Amino acid sequence: MSKLGRQSVLGEASTGYNFDHMYVKKAEGYYGVGKIIDYFLLRLPAVKATQSRKQNILRIVGEKIRQRKNEGKTMRIIDVACGAGRYLAELEAIFNQDGIEIIGVDYDNKSLELGRSIAKAYEISETRLRFFKGNVFRLGHLKKFGNKIDWRPHIIIASGLIEYLEDDKVRDAFRQIYEGLDDEGLFLFVNQQNNPSKKLMEKVCTTREGAWILHYRLPNILQTWLIAAGFKNININTDQWGMYNLFTVRK
Ligand SMILES: C[S@@+](CC[C@H](N)C(=O)[O-])C[C@H]1O[C@@H](n2cnc3c(N)ncnc32)[C@H](O)[C@@H]1O
Image (cartoon, rainbow, N blue to C red; front, top):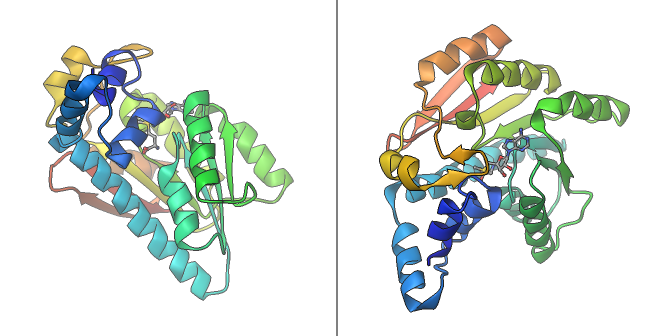
């Protein structure tokens, strides 16, 4: 009966719009009881850690944008698997859409539609925050597009992506992201090393592909793959719940 509970058990657990509901943190559900359940689900430690991950992205990317703006330069950002991209719209809003160009890519229509409506609510121009429908593993297309319009990102963000991928896909993504980044560009991504609600999630939550089973990884294995892909200056921050590691690495 709760919005988060319902979406999570009916195959929408990993969608961008389900995550956006966690960020908005406003209890919704059927009848009063659904709303009450939603209120408590939105306060589970795993949900708090997810809300905090979004705030950390905002803080770190915000700092980088500020530094670049001080040098009088525009910051170009791509978010792969952006979902509804609420933090992207908030970044644009914080900087009054000045000195930032953002592209969000996701393959889910409903999340992209929500993303566009969030951007509209903030009155953000479509030239500042563009949403593209696409599979991040066909980013070759994006690279060609980038070359064509001479648009290479200074930052690539991947939040809520790699825990869904098999090892070889993660290594492949790292290589593609390295190639796609501008020289000295920054790759910011989030790894999930554990989850306080892991057992519950595996039992009751489902995605379009079936049970919500994630690939939990310790940071050192990712570090090895990042180095193999060519990245340097690897920085890792683990949250207070021991759930997410936020990586920032340089090309
Ligand atoms: C857990 S959500 C994360 C959304 C957002 N990045 C965040 O941190 O809130 C995962 C998103 O990844 C998208 N996704 C997963 N695999 C993808 C792929 N291969 N190409 C494009 N989008 C993908 C899903 O549609 C979903 O919106």
